[in-house]
Length: 286
Image 1 (cartoon, rainbow, N blue to C red):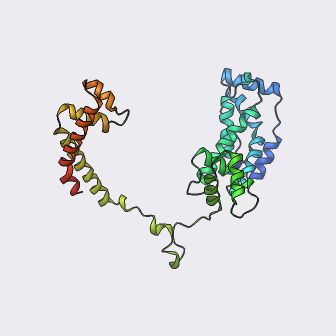
Image 2 (cartoon, rainbow, N blue to C red; image 1 turned 120 degrees about the vertical axis):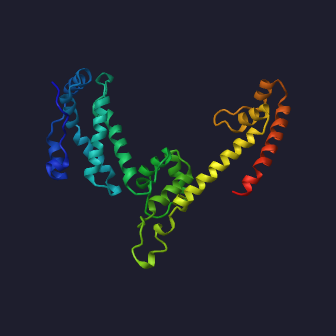
Image 3 (cartoon, helix red, strand yellow; image 1 turned 135 degrees about the vertical axis):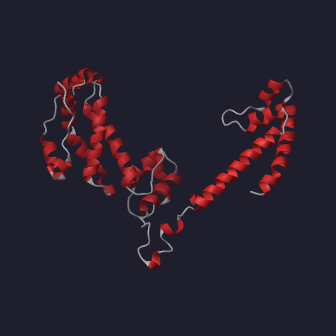
């Protein structure tokens, strides 16, 4: 027996409070019931079994999502993102592993909420590396007050989270900063609004066309300079400087041409000098 995996949504029940109450009324599963439902879903793709597994753990998502209310995001959105993580956990859950779904699902739920918080807390992303994410989600609770952190506290946090002190200081500054409107709120603020100084002139149509024309000229000039070299010199220059992956060493080229590495260096230096002379007029007009 299979049917669509339809879950109750907050909009369907009318409010966040009604949703929480509805989730709390759903009975929790025994270990035997959970094992049976998970086995049916894994072996038979029974979506009704998957639905029951998800429904019985909605209260878990609600509980976890409360820990992220301090970021000023809607509780309803946090719950919905957590539910996505719960469904991913149910899809990947193997009842034969000997662990309950609640233990397996926690990390999936948190991961989905983490991504939502990072993408939506501010327009400017605050955490991109693993260390920054660790600081983002732990630094607030570890600070003793709202003041700037002292050297001792920075060192303590860095040691406890296994990150660099500089990263602690940088994240503390970011989290302590205030949001700034992109457009000016008044005439007096116009000069200091980001819209006044974040324009990228290099993306203007005229600038783009000029840059593209210069690139074409330089590419043609490089091709012409390479064409002026003898085959051996061209091979050495291309293998040493124009290969994106695994450029050859002097010794590797020496073995290829059966000469010494010093001879390859001399040929390379002479070829590069000849190319510079050929490209000089072009570079002067750039």
